[in-house]
Amino acid sequence: MALPAALRELDSTQRHTVLASFLGWTLDAFDYFLLTFVILAVAQEFHVPKQEVTYGLFLTLAARPVGALIFGRLADRYGRRPVLMFDIILFSVLEVACAFAPSLGILLGLRFLFGIAMGGEWGIGASLAMESIPAKSRGFVSGLLQSGYPVGFFLAALANWLLVDLIGWRGLFVVGALPALLVLYIRRKVPESPVWEARRSEARQGIFESMRGHWKLFIYLMLLMAAFNMFSHGSQDMYPTFVQETLKIPAGSGTAFMLTALLNLGALFGGLTFGSLSEKIGRRRAIIIAALLAIPVIPLWTYGGSLLLLGLGAFLIQVMVQGAWGVVPTHLNELSPDAVRGTLPGFAYQMGNLLAAITATAQTWIADRHGGSFAFAMSTWIGAVAVVLALLTWLGPEARGVGFGKDCDAA
Image (tube, rainbow, N blue to C red; front, side, top):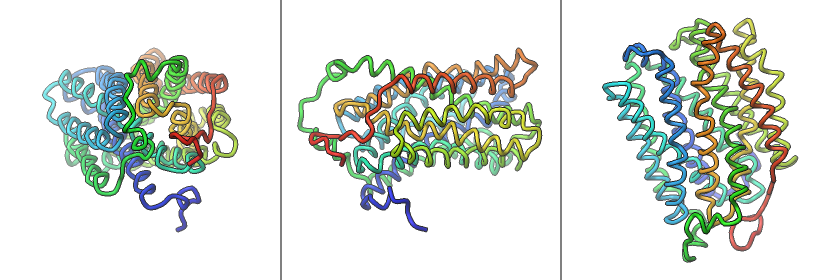
C-alpha cells in the first residue's frame, strides 16, 4: 500500500523520527488508559467508592504540567532525544510500580508520579518531530502524532479484553513496562532535532527571559488546551464506566471491546483527516469545524438505543473530538518561539490538562445527581465544551507554515 504523500516526502531518518514520536505518545496513552478500564475492579479490591479511584485520573492529569515544565526545560537545554528516552523509561517503571501498590493511597501517589513522567512526553516528542520535517508535511504528521493517543486507548482496551481475566488489574500494569523497549529504537534510529542542533552553541536563556513577550500567548494556549482536554477526556475517560454501568455490558466482553475499538477507529480517522485538512483550510478553521460537528452526534453517541447506533455514535464522536485534536501538535509548535519549543507547547498543553483534570470526577458527580446517568453527564459536558472550544479557537492566532530555525524557511 502506497504511503500518503506527506510521508513520501520524508526521508528515511525523518520517517523514523515521526514513527518514534508517534509510538511514544501511543505507549504513554496506553499506560494512562489502563486505569480507566479497571476503576471498578480497583474500587472493589480496596473497598472504596469508584469516585475515590477516579482521583487517580485527576492526579495523573494534575501532575502532567510539572513534568512538561521539568522535561521541557531539560529538552530545550540538553536536546530532545536524550530527554525523551529518559522520560519513556521513567513512566514505564512507574507504571509497573502501580501493580504492587498495597493500598489505594499508594496507588494514587504512584499515579501522580506517573503523571509527571507522562507530562514530559508529548511536548518533547511533538517538537522533535515537527522540527525534523518539511513545513508542508506538518498537517498530516500532526494528525498522525495525535492519533497515537486513541491508538494507545485501543491497545489498552485490547489488553484489558484479552488479559484482565487471566492476570487481573495488577497484571495489566506489569504489561505497562513494554514502552521502555521503544528507547532501544530511538537510540538506534532517531537523531537529534536539526533545529535544536543549530541552536546548541547559543547561550541558553532562563525560562522567564525566553518567555519575555510571550506570556499572553501562553495564557491563551493554556485556556485553549483546557478546553481541548475537557473535550477529549470528557469523551473518553468515563466511557468504559458508561459501558459497564449504563449499558450493563461487562468490562471484559467482546461487545465492550467492539465499542471501544469503534471509538478509537473514529479517533484515528478524524485525526488524520482534519490534520491533513488543516494544511488546506487553516488550523483554526479545521478545529472549529470538527468541534461544532461533534454536537449533532452527541445523541447518537450516548442515547443510540441499539448497539449498532451506539457503535456508530462512538465512531463519529471521536472523528470530531480527535479531528480537532489532530491539528494541535502543529498548531502549538507553529505558535511557539524556537527557544522554548521544547517547553511551551507541552507546558501549555499540560497546564490545560491541570485545569481539565477534574473532568472524570465532575462527570461522576453529575451522573450521581441524575440517577447515575453517565449518558446525561457526558452529553451535557461535551456539548458545552464543544462550543467553548470553537469560540476560543476563533479568537486566537494562527501561524500555519511558519519557518522553524534561523533561516525561517518552510523546511
